[in-house]
Amino acid sequence: MSEDTLISSLYPPPPPYVKFFTSENLDKLQQLRDANPGQPDTSLSIPQEESHLEFLIPPTQPTGETYRSFGSLWNFADKIPKLEDQGIPQLYRDVALQGGEDSQFKIDELKKLLKSLLLNFLEVTGVMGIAPHEFSTKLEHIRTLLINIHHLLNEYRPHQSRESLILLLENQIETKKNEITEIEKTCKEVEDKVKALVEQYVDGKTPKETDDQEAANDETRLTEEPVGDGRVTETA
Image (cartoon, rainbow, N blue to C red):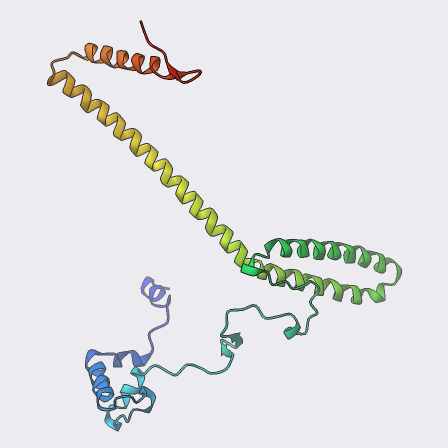
């Protein structure tokens, strides 16, 4: 396979009606709208010779609660379908706390389901040793438990997303604080360098005199710090 063929097969070609989306056709469609004010686009009287303008009109929004895409049925509302709607019994309790902060409740229910799953697994091993022909019932129980666990984990996703976002923002804040600290440290170093150069070349002080002056200032500042009851220690 040549390189040109490989590159051209990465994405499907655009639909054929894309060639009708031109500035000229958009102007013609706008003229039809101006000639029929208040009339929806789907009801515009488009001449036969300008039938290609129909491709420029957006389709109407589908009605109903579901739509089909790629052979699967999807809900317009972004919500997790209930187990009862799929013919599967729900083994955990529902809760509707104010603000949706029910993550701890879901954790407790998951622990209960996991304990039930472990118990049913032990029962399967016992049934296989006593009455192997009855293991299918316990396997169905295990299947129901696993589906409930999977469904409950999907309901826990919003809380996981919030916590991940909070962690990401906290890391960004910590990074910004460290960057600010480094910037302030660099600014202080540059300020000290500039001050030393000014004292050396403008004020005529030698580097040794500058260092002695800084040491004296540091010593004075340390002796003037409050100690004990807050009184300032005076130097002799």
